[in-house]
Length: 183
Image (cartoon, rainbow, N blue to C red; front, side, top):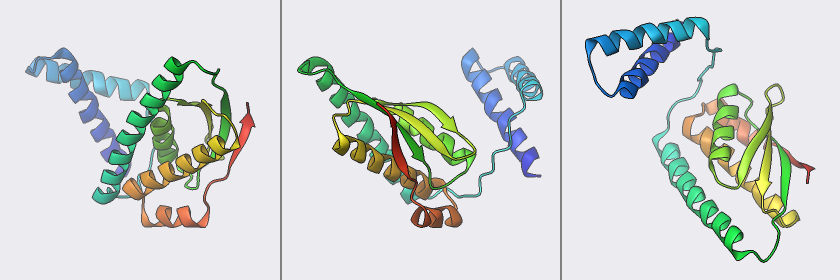
């Protein structure tokens, strides 16, 4: 039953995108969008993603405010590094094991990390719940520890925004281990 509901939601979402891309609403556009959506889902079936959590408005607000703050701060830091030109910035690739192991949380964390300037997901290990993150302008152990803390806090904000009670308890039980992989 949940799988059928997910497919219907996917068809609706793809149809809305189709109509928006055409820029004009008409019955022809709507029917064309429905046909294309069903064809896309038949040819490229989506893997099942379970959402055991619930939307928590306070957690969503905290995530949104902090995410926007991170975007602005990271952008200014990159601009400062680019125009200051006093030193050559160093980077690192860190492995981050997430505390909550689900495809949804892995994807949400990866997207949030990649959207903030100065960090980029270079690989993931789905089975182990590990993100490999390229970090810009790392000068030493203190910067790496700060980034480790930032990723832990980001995962916690995401889980507290959309996670289940069991997933929230996983945060306290097993804060993900983070280690430096390469420099």
